[in-house]
Length: 418
Image (cartoon, rainbow, N blue to C red; front, side, top):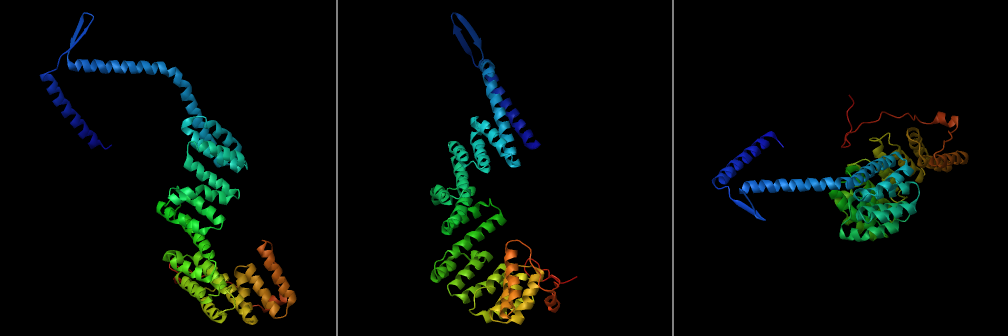
């Protein structure tokens, strides 16, 4: 409290005390106590003071009598809190056996029983003791039912029982009563069971709560919307589903990617192209470029011309170079595809680029080189090393040195060189 508030408060107390004293002084009152022939006379103020003193003395006597009995309780409370703290520290440090032991001991005291049992269940689950973890959660449900339910759903999902996790949280999700962690588990479990429509319910309450943070929420939203779009069973359902999504969700790169792949699969290549081209005008995305280059043979000449126009603005984008090379190979422009793919491999080797280069060598009737490229693609996909092409071919290859990387601001506009 600020000093001026203390000053004002003391002044008010002094004023009230002055008026009260003046009021009592005019008529202090009279109290007569008669007990077994003994009379005690006093004023009302004196009687009140004596009663207060008697109450204080009785309270002190009761506290003194109870003190020995409460010593053990106080010691148990201190030990439980210390064990809870030690158990949480051990859990964070990865000493799960010690954590579980300390937390189970801490759970003997009622005030920390719920949190201790929840943490003990987490420690047991980290050790692979799922049965013991569920037992701890059964006990914790008596103290903290909502938190125990969320943690149980998490354990079920981690052990491959996502459908049980969804069923556990379904009632509260329908009523809108899940905590932020509960909504996250409901969304994750729904995605794991291929039910993205259910996961959509979690987005609005999570966005309103703000507990995930902007980055984590954006990542979850992208995965949910992408899975929801990918779940469309046919072209008509896809078009209807896409049109009903909010505008900001249709702009998510992952959602556009999922829509384009599904649209191309259902023969709606023009719609897929339009969405990707619109998204790339807003924000450049290598993953969308890769999808653009792999949508099949329909309208491939138009897509190739558009992609070649992007190379001037993004000369060092390996995904774009690979996409252009793949489209050139698909229309049998072997000589045109090879420089793009070689440059892509020089900048950032990828299995897709090696595979496309193998297709080029197949088209040029170089079976041995094609096999080497395919082996490199498989090796790179497995995280293994690749085998270089023969020296005589390397000498005839185009200049694969990476040109200066252009710098762009947050709006995608190139920065001028100093």
